[in-house]
Image (cartoon, rainbow, N blue to C red):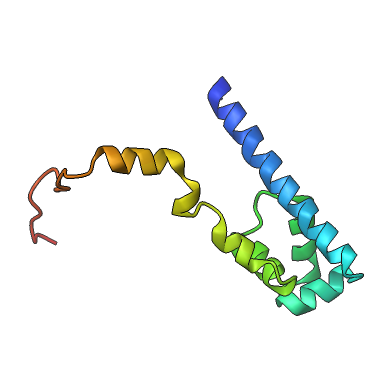
Length: 110
């Protein structure tokens, strides 16, 4: 694995672990047990444990369900919103007026 891949993997892992900690903090502030959050989110208590541990194999839908149960799902909706992507906005503005075309004609051979 190259250095860039290691840096990327570490950054992703750190972000997921922090998200899990944030979920755990929100749960504890509400004085909920992990079982309470699991019940409200419609997931198994082991899934809540995985979320809070930042386990990389835990599906995003489980995180979304936990955030929904905590009343925080609107924050998830804002993640990677177009208004939060200045680089993408700059690139799109630079291409204004250009037509988007497929690189080759599509055929109907299936």
